[in-house]
Length: 78
Image (cartoon, rainbow, N blue to C red):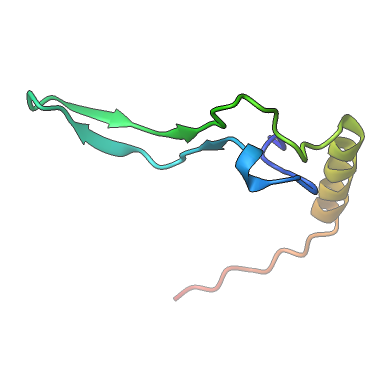
């Protein structure tokens, strides 16, 4: 769940991108398919800025404290 977070990446050029949006692709023979794209560095270098296991723990600890202290406001009817 936290794999998409980055901290102090050296460059955007060494990051891998995955599309969340699905696109309709129509082939030359009329068949329709759904497709997503991804962009990966051609030279195969590793992504920089990934969180360490200790940083993962810090984020989860922060989220659990924030959730326990959350104030939920009542929903108002329109």
